[in-house]
Image (cartoon, rainbow, N blue to C red; front, side, top):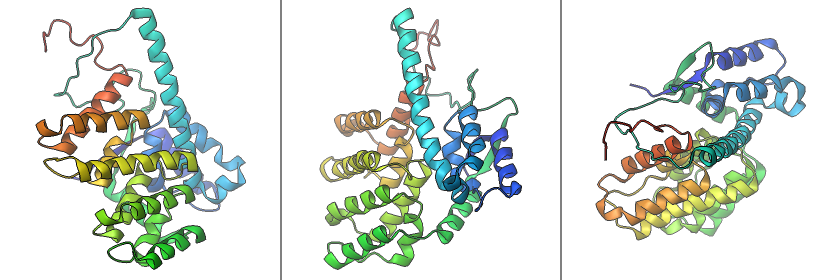
Length: 307
């Protein structure tokens, strides 16, 4: 069964209205922006969409603009949540938190989750979103600087096989220049660990795009590169039951702040000998961080005696 991305119906309806309005130079592709918009509040998503018509660059390339704006708003909302949580803790004191591992709670299930909206949500099939992403890849144009980087990497001969532009240029067009260059830099620096360069570059580029970090700036791209290098370091230096898949791990950690993601990886290293399924462990650990940040589970432990 295909995975689903839940997005407020208000947001999907607004996207369709914009595409039918004739105000945009190119289509705002739902498959390109759905995951990013699903991770912010309905108000934030609608604010971005309502502002598209007023900005020339946004009308020309609405999908790229929305991805970048959603990433920025997600950061602002996370900072706001952290400040609110700190204020609550200052008033009420530190409370014990017991994670309910058995309960799978989808985003928006808790009372007051603004992103769901009064009109409910629309479930978007991941397969359909993937088709739209593929269309976006096919229509994209690879930046000259990124293409030159690929050619230079091939000329150096550091990889076990050359990168095939036909295979990697589509996925690389999904990324901003700083992110694409950072990805290629990371591949070069870890050339001795890369046995399938074309697959790795294409897969990592798509996962980065889906994470909402495909359009971040150069400073954020550098930080993101550190996370990728940390994952590779773990595979090379830590004895795990199974090696970490770069794309899957980036997808698992993408909702977390950079420092939180590194902390989760640090805990993985410290407990490596006891962990039978590393990626499953990472999913649980990442969910715990998010639940704690969002304040879920507060007060649930009363009377249960769960240890």
